[in-house]
Length: 114
Length: 238
View 1: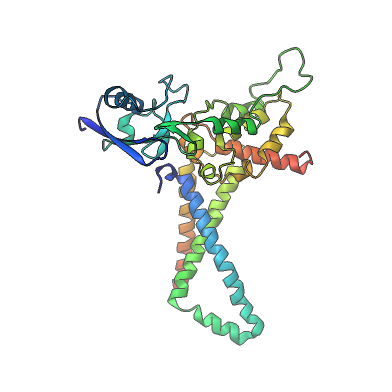
View 2: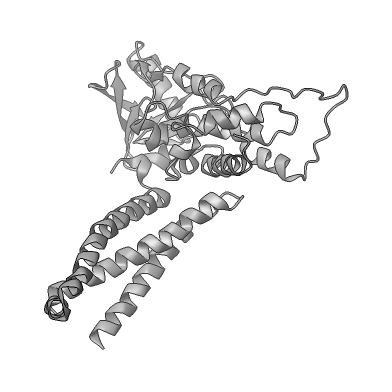
């Protein structure tokens, strides 16, 4: 990490980019999975059985976190780019985005374990 | 607090040579004081640049422990609590020697971004009246205090990634002129900043805003240019 990059705006941009890449990899796989339904209900059901494994649950939680982070940080970018005033309190905004994303993921986890 | 500072200074032009100096600590010592001590007391061949010493000219900007800063306004105790300083020239500009960079490409981009005031025709013989509370004047005010030190340009990753990117300082200057109601080159300026290497190349990392010693927000200025270009495009003016 180079010192000039170590500030909340840069970390927000990095996490936004990495979560976007994770979602870009996930989406085609998601459609591929849904596409198994085209070959019949049994094929889809067999695939859905796989999703009960703990490994898939962990991956699913990761995807929910990536989605929440990408959404929250994306809204922040829109705020920076479209409001006619400079962003104040960047640190608080970025911390808020991270906090909301983690909270959303914890809610998802609660639902998983319920 | 130890009696001396351990200072590493990048020398030459290719970044490979680092010289180390032990510099006596003084109360309220600035990083510029340290560089001056090295040149006067240890190595007179050290090249660096300064003029005003009070944060008005911006010529003493360097990379201090990895961050671009004005050395005259940076106290040693705030950046080197452990007594270790690393001094390098500003990033993203060709090095002339040691800590001195060639700022010609930086200012060439101000020209490329139409950063020059061009009075519009029929401005009239009398003074143009610009109400201080008008939105345009307030937008220009927020960005106009730039003194062209190059700190934002040095902090910008996009400049490092693509050398033709106009950079935060030139775009910030263009934004002040976009908001100048007396200026007559609004369209030409928007065309100049709307290209691939212009405002739309900005990733909104905010490093320029983070490091600007004047607490300006080139990020906000560039965002303003993006909106102005979008508006002009939708109106069919570009």
